[in-house]
Image (cartoon, rainbow, N blue to C red; front, side, top):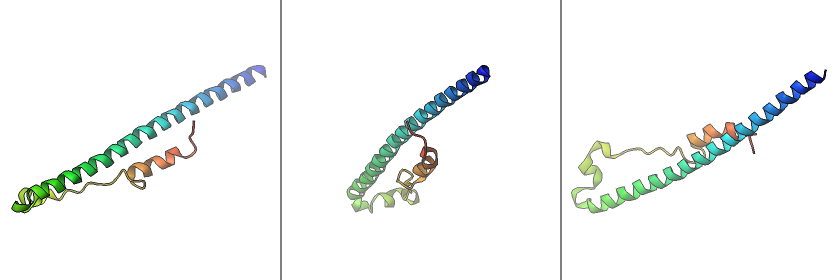
Length: 99
């Protein structure tokens, strides 16, 4: 009987260690992806500012799109918003895992 209790104790300890490691990994992943989201927001803003500046400089020629053609109108997805694909993918994994 004492061997069974000892084995259960070992299993329980290993389960706690595994839970702690998973929670630590989840926290690190969330922090890393928050950094990626912040960088994407800044890159999108910089891109739009550069496009506006180029449009002003090339206004006499009809702007950037007149010079570049059809490929000028590029869609930049907003996956980094609060309800974007990054946040939506992370929300189920985040609930209930805390360190």
